[in-house]
Image 1 (cartoon, rainbow over the protein chains, first blue to last red):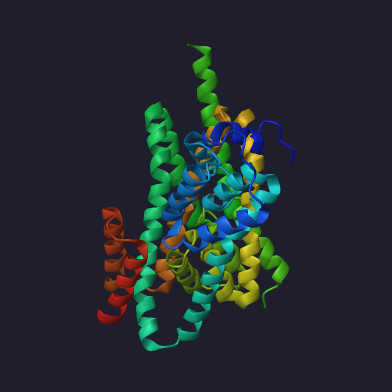
Image 2 (cartoon, each protein chain N blue to C red):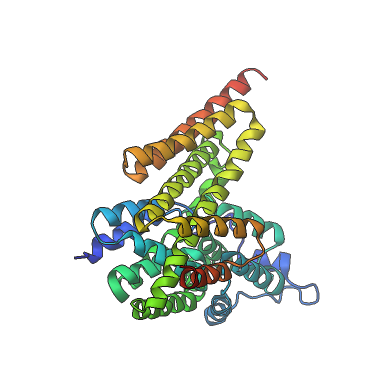
Length: 219
Length: 169
């Protein structure tokens, strides 16, 4: 994974080393890296946003592995990469510091505590599942989870629709139709989900491309 | 009977072709239910555990792995959700070349809208199959209202819902 445009630790050092110690920056050892990310993993109670806040403070303000702008740019990339955004961010930061090995170390450190605790919590839940009070509580929690899921769907669609609205009525109509069509198709025919997603992506790509070429044709 | 390799592939595939911690939900829901390897109830339980447990809420998949296939399932799920994020390095490089292309942006928008629509459908399905009544609809609305107010942390919100489940007849 040699990448000439990725900042090397040396280049990070030029930019971010504290002024009183020029050139003294060294890539932290693998062990030290693991420690830093394990600490972040242990503190990751409170979900994604809180954890992102902690990561930013650790890697931008305390370790100075990357600048504020780099952090923001990396974070926006995570929204178009596969998998959990926070883990993508962990990979990007880890990679900046120590290449692919750094990425794997960072991922391991962040996940080890939270995955272990999640497994323990699930096991505990399963052993208590049959108790009446627990079942009653779960019956209350299920609709609350559904409510949160509906909010999640709305929050996912909202910025996309807002961006489309800024481009004009045609873009907004296309986006609304895509959203409505994906709901109707999924509800009525239950086709493979990947197929629906790919078709919607292809429609979106065609629409945007068509719009761009038409615009450049008549400036 | 769950076949571990196929199970792993379904988990991996769902994360590979989606973005975010819950983008894999529609695909997993369809695949695991079709094979009879998971029930609707287990999906909701796993989602709730993912909200309460530390780390990104995307770790709900690990709870799902445990509920459906025990410790083996949890470990398979942990591996399956750790691998796709590594591809962000490829995406970062690709993005420097074609990220600004309108077709690329249009694809991401279409994809996001369809994922949102599919999550909506999964949520409605989960509610319908686990049983709808006045109380559950009320809790759905209350949780939407509370999360809109942004004053109540999610674990507290789920705790309140649990109390409501016990107290409200």
